Amino acid sequence: MSEENYNEVLSLCERYREQFFIGAAVNQYTIDTQQELLKKHFNSITAENEMKFENLQPEEGKFTFAVADKLVSFAKENHKQVRGHTLVWHNQTPDWVFTNKNGSFADRKTVLERMNTHISEVVKRYKDDLYCWDVVNEVVTDEGPKLLRESKWLETIGEDFIDKAFEFAHQVDPDALLFYNDYNESDPTKRDKIYTLVKGLKERGVPIHGVGLQAHWNVSSPSYDDIRRAIEKYATLELQIQLTEMDVSVFEFGDKRKDLKKPTEEMLGAQAERYEEFFNIFREYSDVITGVTFWGAADDYTWLSDFPVKGRKNWPLLFDEQHQPKQSFWRIMEF
Image (cartoon, rainbow, N blue to C red; front, top):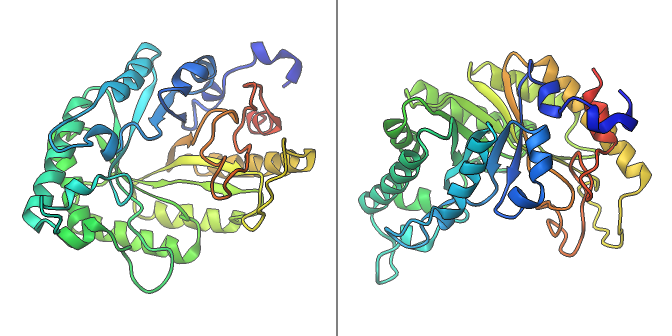
């Protein structure tokens, strides 16, 4: 596959049509600035932030759907599917959800009603347009003996807030695929916790259809063996597996440099090798993996610029800042 004839080359999503869909996270700006790239290479989109609680219902009863509607309209016009992200999360949820007017914590019944109202309104609005939702996001602890992280959802409702979220979503749209989504999903300790959580949901009859592995990885970790073991363990749950927020940082975890204006050739080479092997693994498990979504489409916009190192640019995606294919693109296209 020659890099000289990029304009004639098959799109990324067409190349993988027999394996799984290829998605990208978008926002109200990139849906315009990266429009041609999105149209050509991706057959699914996910709203980066525009469908999170604080953006859809910043004040009780006041829903603001305009930006999310714009993203859905783009998808419909260009025949792309949409993943919903996310209904219940400890971040980006307004304080009013958990409090009374005097500032004290609201009781369980009140918060459950607010959760139900939000999920019902949002899922109902997009019932005909979204095929799946990340219903619950990042509730598992990274370390220690506890299974669930501390959160206002847990404090006000109790451990069954997770079950309730899935049940509320399923009641409104019984055809939607419902996912649990988390990061550090390949770390053995957290992998086992995620497995335990989802296994418990299944055993209780909670309507869950998939596990979302965020796949925020870098040029040195996680290991390929840990990724394989994670996929194999989640596969025993007999649910769909999707890579939901994929990017590959050119910096190792402990690298705090801020002086680079562009990635070195060594970085780009290492990134390309990683992407190639990741996609070798994904294709190997394409009987259980139904989608791979990148957390962005090109390096001109990525959440990893400024995170976790403030003031640092990163280049974690398949296309560069001018929307041209990188080594990583060509490596995963060649199979």
